[in-house]
Image (cartoon, rainbow, N blue to C red; front, side):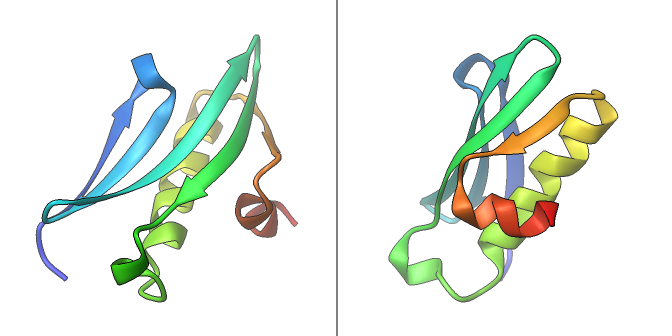
Length: 82
């Protein structure tokens, strides 16, 4: 996999991983000093390649540097908080 990029789109409260013309998305909501990661989506053609994990780890690392209290209503993200 080449030309893989992860960008933060704070105005849309999401992180986007781009591979070619496809996008994987990690959505969140902010509430004061708390962040809730509530949705992860990876296009079917890219599933099983670890892209969701890269995206979630990136989002969680950012949240930690911002000192947010992290919550996850997304079951996939919950796996990383155990």
